[in-house]
Length: 102
Image 1 (spheres, helix red, strand yellow):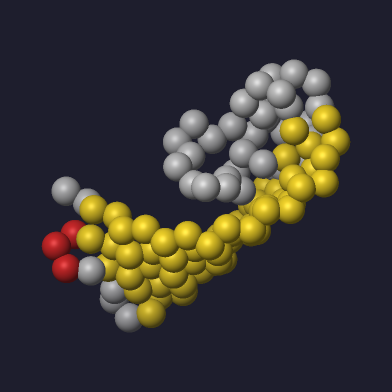
Image 2: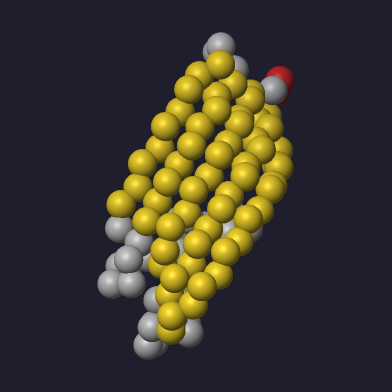
């Protein structure tokens, strides 16, 4: 697979960005640290994400994401083990979250 991230800082506290990631059917695409509603990193297909992040007072961050995923293949066990099954799934998710750093 391959991917890239573009980020642009908006002053010292905020940034906007775009990520694109692609895995073909032969990729080992596993993201053990994934906490997203939809992961572009462990998907067998193409994924893209637009995001905005701003730092708030007291170590808090606010993040807004719009993620779009085109899944072309799946495997039955955690999308890692088993025979490939061809699918045509499109998923879009709009999410927001607060992140606390201690």
